[in-house]
Image (spheres, rainbow over the protein chains, first blue to last red):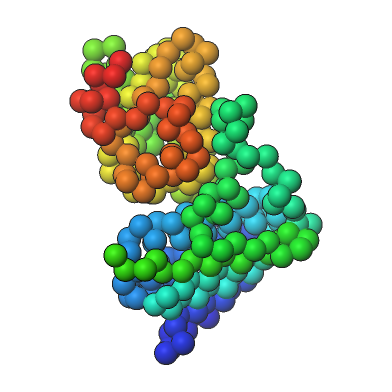
Length: 143
Length: 117
C-alpha cells in the first residue's frame, strides 16, 4: 500500500507476471518525485530504469508464468529514490552479460536493459542468485 | 498492411517521413505492432529512404530500441537508409548511452534530417 509521511513516500505491491500491470506501478513513484521537486531528467531516468527492470523480472525472470509473482518496493524522499524488484526466477549473473555497446554487438537487438539501468541509476545491486535488484537514485547536487 | 495504427507516414519526394502516434512507447503489444509496421515499410511497401521523426515522443524503452535496430538492419540489407530527427533530449541521451547514435545519423529537425539524404 502507498504511504506518505515525514519519512517519505513508499509503496509495496505483489503483482502478477504482466508487464502492463508492472509498468503502471511507476506512476505513483513519479508523482512522489514531482512532489519532492526532483528534476525532470531524473524522473525520466528512474522511469526508464524501472521499466527495464520490471520487464526483465516478468519476461526473463518469471517467463510470464501465471503462477509466479513479482514483488515491488518503491520509496521516495527529497534526496533518494529506491526501487526493489524481486521475481521468482532462478536469477542471473549480470556480469556475464556481453556489452551491447561493443562494436560487434551494436547491431544485435536486445541486451541493453541491464546496461541502461546501471548507466541511469546511482547504485545498482543484484542480490544472489540474481532474481532481486535494488536500484538507488540520489538527487544530484543543485547547480 | 492497409493502414497504420502506430505510425503516420508522409512522403516527401522519395523520402518517407515516419512519425509516431504514441507519446510514450512502453506497452509490449504496442511495441510489437510498431515493429511490424516499421518492417512493413521496407518489406511490403519497398520504401528505402526513411526519416523517423520522433517529435512528440517523450519516452521509449529498450524494447522499442530493439525494433529500430531491426529496422536499420533490414533497410541496410535492402540498400536503403534510415535517419532520425527531433529526439527528445532525454531520448537523445539514451541513444548516446547505448551508442546507437553511431548507428543512426540524428538531426535536430525534420528539415535538417531531410537534408542529410
